[in-house]
Length: 376
Image 1 (tube, rainbow, N blue to C red):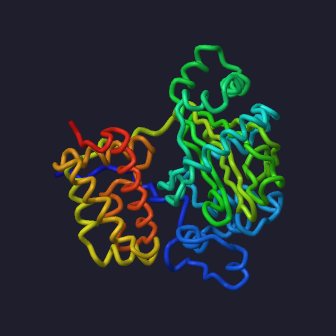
Image 2: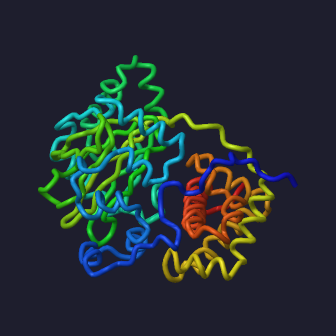
Image 3: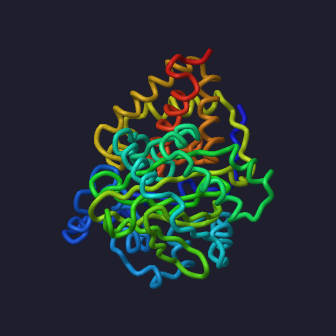
C-alpha cells in the first residue's frame, strides 16, 4: 500500500505541549501561581512555551513581549506565521462593539452553560472544554431578539454585501465557554478554524472574575483586550489569540464561528492504512505507558476504551479509516492522522496529545452522526 503523502515541512502539533526533555518543573512559585489548576492543565503548564507562560500564566505585560518572538516560541509553521502576521500588521484586525448583548441575555447564557456544560476534548489543547454547544434556534430561545445584533456584526466587520454575510451565517458553530481557576483556567494561543469569529464577553473583566484576559497579536503588538459585559470582539481566523489564567471567579463568553477558513488541500487518506496504524498504536503498551506519563494517569485505559467503542461502531477498517478522515478534514488537522502519529511515536512525546485529541474528536463526531446507533 502506498505511503501517505504529507508535506515534508509539516511539524506535528506545532502549537502545544513540548517534548519531555523541555519540561519545566513545577517549582514552589509556579505551583502556587497555578493554584487550583489540575490534571491536563498542570501537564500543559509544564510544557508551555516560555513566552506563552509569561503571558498566560504569570500575567506579564503584553507590551513587553515581541510578537515575532512569540511566533517563534510557539513554533508556528511558515504558513501559520504568514497568517498571524496579517493580523499583526493590521490596525483593523479586531472590531470591538460594546453592549451587543443586554445584561439579561448575558445572564441567561451564563446560567445555561453553568447548568449544562460538557467536558469534552477542546480543539485547541485537548483538555476539557467546559462549554455548551448551541444551535441557532437554542440561542434564540435563550436570548430572544438580542441575537439579531450578533449577525449584524459580520456585516460591520466585512463590509460585505448581504449575500456574503448570509453565506457565512449558513455555516456557523455556536457555543458558550466557561473558565474558572479549578476547571479550565486559560486557553493557549491559537488561531480559529472559522473564517470569522465573534466573541462576546458575558461578564465584565475584573467584575465577576480576575485574570481571564483576552490577548491578541494585532496592530504591531501583543495586546490586552479589556471588555465589559455584553461587549463583542470580531476577528478573522488569522488572528493569533489566547486567554490568560483565570485567578478567581468564573469567566463566561459566547463564541460564534462563521464559515470555514481557507485551508491548504489535505491529502486523501488511505482508510485501511490509517485504521492499521491506529490499531498498532493502541496495541503498543510501551507507547501507551509513555502517553500516561505525558497526558496523565489512566490515559492508556481511556485510549483503549474509546478505541473499542469506535471499533464497535465502525467494524471494518474502511469504516474506521473514514471516521479518521472525517476528523482530519473537519479540524484541518493532518497531524491527527494515525500514520503520522505512528511515524513519530518513538521520538516525540507530543504525539500522545494528538492521539488523545483524535480519539476524543472521533467519539464526538460518532455521537453526532449516528446518535450512538452505529453506521447504517
